[in-house]
Amino acid sequence: MTTTDYPPLHGPTYPDALDDQLRALDADAALRAFAAARRRLAADPHRPAYHFSPPQNVMNDPNGLCFWQGRWHLFYQYRPGGAGDRVHWGHTVSDDLIHWRDLPLALYPDTEKDCYSGQTLVEDDRVIAIYHGTESGNAIATASDPLLLNWRKHPNNPVIPIVPIDDDGAPYRVFDPCIWKQDDGYYSLSGTYKDGERGVDCQGIDHLFHSRDLAQWEHVGALLEDKFFAERGEDAAVPVFWPLGDIDGKPSGKHMLLLFSHKRSGRCYIGDYDPATHEFTPDSHDRMNYGPWTVGSLHAPSAAIDPDGRFIAVFNVKEGKPSAGWDDIMTLPRHYWLADAGALGMAVAGDVESLRYDHKRVAPTRITANDEVVLDGIGGNAIEIEAVIEPGDAREVGLYVLRSPDGAERTRISFYPQDHRRFDTGSLQIDISEGSLNPDVFARTPETGPIRLAQDEPLRLRVFVDRSVVEVFANDRQCLTLRVYPQREDSVGVSAFARGSDARLASLDIWQMRSIW
Image 1 (tube, one colour):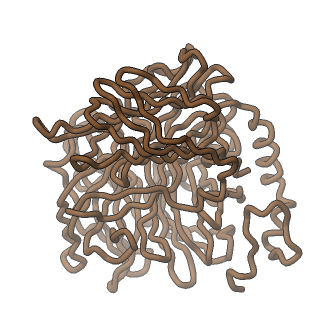
Image 2: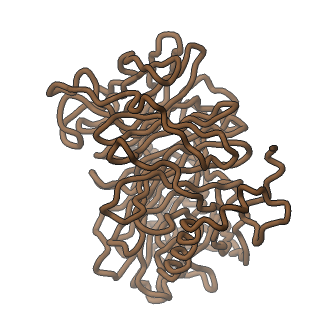
Image 3: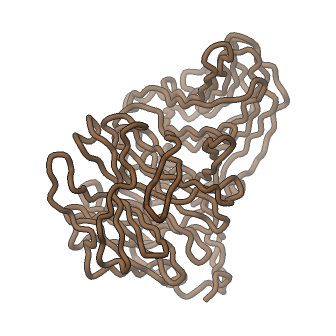
């Protein structure tokens, strides 16, 4: 069967040519329950319209993002019975990385307590999933059917069992793994820590294992021991290790180790990998999360290489208030690449433009110093904004979104230009301190990340607002993500502001965004 036998998953009806395997899923009781849950929870004002969220109950890390037979598959930690249930692998599928369709659960715990995080490897005739079985070890499962519905666990599971360790974590801790293949077999990382207590005072380490047959695995040593880049207390969990291409996906000669620390959340290393010696030498360390310690907004990653050689990743975003009936969402997919001078480039991936409707444009507008320009007739709580702002000499410029008419609720997206007379550093920020009047919303500091623009380069923003999440991409060099929970139904406005000196809103385009469901 070829991929052309399959219709687009996001069509409004099933074509007559729909494959029998897809058609049979309509009768699946679990999927009918998922659909009913999505209809029931759709009235929640903070339930996203076009970011993936679980059909119901508790979701956590994304797992095993992969491209198989013309479609994208995403798995995720899922507790089908609620917060007290054991972790399974939930499963969703897409043909454009934006529109998703629920599929039956992929992995069920049996010998392990939970099927925790892991990644996948796509081969010509099958997909291999490697995951952490809690209280057991790292395990293997494989599937080869067109929709990856039928998974077979390896009879030797756990293929990398938990072993006794000393006080420093030697010889190795077994935790969330990833997998790739070289000429001499399969390699896997176990993302963990040593020498102390995770989140407090430890050193991140990713242990490397090798196997020729997926059954017997040998501990090779450490691919990464971070004694320099990260802070003490940061582990190196949920690793994904792939080649990092340029903007067009062409090989750059570098690898990116994308991972997560329980102290500071999403982060990565970029450097050189020698497949013969298995040495990874990082050139740089970048963060994807800049918020408070311990519970960052941008959590664990999953990533894959697309058919064009591009590094595609997705994260889960942690809640900012108690949830009811469902928990956590995924970011929009991101394309990462090696940009000029070794910097990390980033932009939204997938066919997000297919969601746009009701386009409006704002004419070039002067933003008077220390003033806020409310954009009449512009706004919404499920929107995309493309804006170009020329800061001039202003010390801060930006937009307010999810703004109530009186400004009592508003979320600030702002840019602080670098001061070329001093340290030549700039920053991008999302500040939700005025974002909600709801007393249940957790307090947190702004999400603030570094960005460097040339002397007269304008700020180019691509802003995605989806009810309770705001994602901001700036100049293909920075992306920030944060949850926000407006209480008022009329908190949908948009305004522009400048502080210190005048600025100019060179252009602003806005689209309403359709629900993917």
